Image (tube, rainbow, N blue to C red; front, side, top):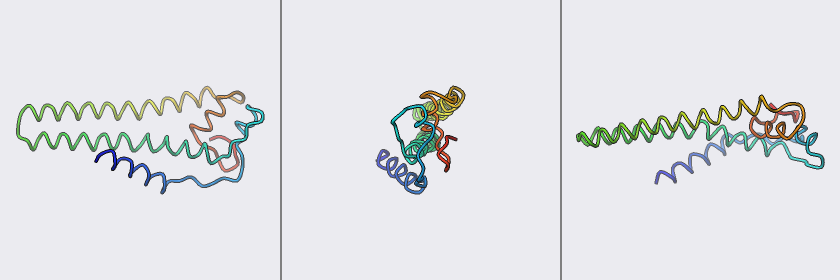
Length: 136
């Protein structure tokens, strides 16, 4: 049941937060990969998925952790309360790790991506593309 709700929420976010379709091609990948033409909507879609994962997954982990903690508290048993607390703490740590790992990867790729090379193209996929076709 939780997986179905999670998938419905992800699909709803993608539908309502769908990036606008851009008519330009990415200049970042074309200059570094001769003969490769990538439409700007592909990196923007990948960027949108990354943003959804970065925000929705930690929020859902915290919500499910709070529900587990609430179940433990309503059970009025010491071992259930401790189990709920431990699960809540584990989910909080998991949420923080997911958020910060994605943010650190985005930051490192932004630093490493220079004017040339495949990292510029990876930077476009991770950080999205502006309306003029250049990377953010």
